Length: 231
Image 1 (cartoon, rainbow, N blue to C red):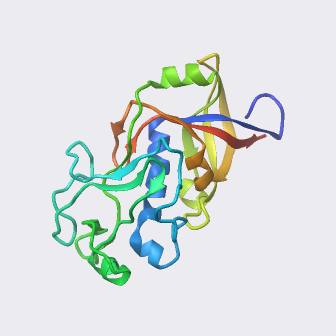
Image 2 (cartoon, rainbow, N blue to C red):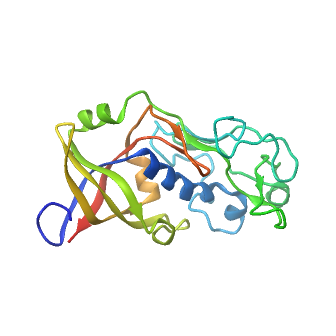
């Protein structure tokens, strides 16, 4: 429930905790695939060199980081893994490629070939995606924003996010916060926006990076003005 009224809706600052932010980054990862771009299945197609996020956003896929769960010296085709900066200061700078998709795009592999299993053919994918962290803790970010929603759990992410249009609508649970302190629990609500808008509306990135199982690191992420609704 969102507050005490039925069918209530609002736009509030939202803070995603580290695990939720990692989940969204995992969904976003597929949009940087050069193969998806070639097939017209990425919301970033034809946007190389454009501002696609808030200037505070720098997004890197770096399998050479030993603390990442997807750390590797070589990709699925035997090429050396490397640090690939995908978004630098809000500007889209690179897509990821394996050898096949790179040839089709007229470029070089970024050492980003992955396999679903030892019998599968290689495809393109992130291994260790992370936002460049800020400096403040979750508590400090809540205090600076004052009032909003701390999202601790999301549901329906894989079915509720469209990686082509960027539209998303997912279930969420968490805690309201006021004056920088957590307040009443919130459940059975829906968060809706677009990935494009969310990237531009980032307020702050926390300094509490944590590598979690999966392909993306978690970090506290504050976003302004997401649409919230609940009954």
